[in-house]
Amino acid sequence: MRLKSYLKYLTRFLFLQVLLTFLTIYYFDNFLIYNQEIKQNIYLNLIEDATRFMPFINSEFITIDSFFVLAIFIFLIILFSTKFYTYVNELSFSINRNLIDEYFQLYLLWTSYLFVIFYIFRFESVSRGYLFIYSFLIPFILLIFRNTEFISSLLGRSVTNEAFITFNLDDNSNFRNLRLLTFRKNIGSFNIRNFNNPDNLIKKIDKINKENKINLIIINLDTIKTINEKIEKYLILLNKKILLISKNKLNFKNKFIYRYELIDGRNLIYFNNDVQYGSKYILKRIIDIVLSIFGVILFLPISLLVIFLILITDGYPFFIKQRRVGLHGNHFNMLKFRTMKKDSHKLRDSLEDLNKGKGPLFKIEDDPRIIKKLKFIREFSLDEIPQFINVLKGDMSIVGPRPLFDDDTKLFDTSYMRRLNVLPGITGLLQINERNTDDFSTWYKYDIEYIENWSLYLDLKIILRTPLAIFSKKIKGL
Image 1: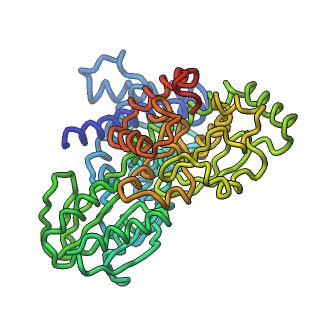
Image 2: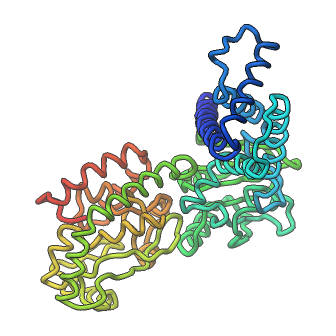
Image 3: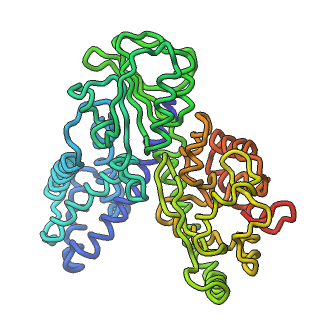
């Protein structure tokens, strides 16, 4: 685990080294220097200083660009040697709900270093206005790449949009000032004192989870030393952020990775089993954005043809919005080209007798709501093309479990609620294996398999196999 952390720090260090060096050299050449004569004077000053203080260095290696490489390198060494930048402790107290303070700490450190370096090495006659702008620019970049939260928010998953619930935590408790809580929204505080009956807590969390978006659960266990094994396993498999607070050090029956802190005489256990979070989420979103832009462009001619066929066959509208449930219970409007008669979803209840789907599934053989001339659009999944827009917005991913209706979600059992802890997708394991099944247990099998084995490599495999599934005689549509 320590090696993994070191590799993460090294990767971020090298990335910042390249980014900041490139930006500094570009900015210096295009904005800070008025003309080549000034640049030549700065270069001669560097040669003079090197001759006086470091005569063992060959003058061929002394350039303004190499100076900036070394200067950025030294600054990053100083910055990464501090816990302030390299370690964001979510289990520390914080009353600040914005990043202004953190930015100005970086700003003061950077400007102090910058002006000392420029003074010592005689960087004269540079543009003061552009230098002032540059002094603000670098700390902003450093803040963005300090941790994954800022980048995640730019890609559609902001920590300020996450929500939490608490159990047995007083409203005036000092632990409500933990950084982990201050950036997130509290949607409920509950009291459950009897942990001997695990169903009380599990049913309560399950009920809230079906009605609201939950990312974090905080449980104050008071004097409990060992929690019920069923509760323990449930929390581990919940795939959310969990914080346990107890006066005593907790003993666990299952093996799992967690953080331990002793704060204000209380033992804090924190573990994050969120499947797609941090750098994993960022990489997945980057891939989704690139592929969805490519998909929109590639399928634009087909989309225009589909729109034309829908309009001449059944008129406007040519697309529909369906309210679906996404990541951690987030509701969104999923887009589809319309292949059913207008307001067909309102007929669902009246057609329940024809439903051959098991569990939450609603499937009718030869569905009377489908416009007959447009069946081929559904057969080859052309109606799903607008969902590339949902992917761009961050509501969906290219790969993931299919998003279902809110009414369907309420029928999920406790274990199947885990499907909401990954981004829903256009395609997935089910779609490349047994898309036409009306057996809900098959959906369950593939969705849980995807969640427990998720990786970017698995996503790429599914994407590559999807075109074959579209034209398969066994698997029609997605």
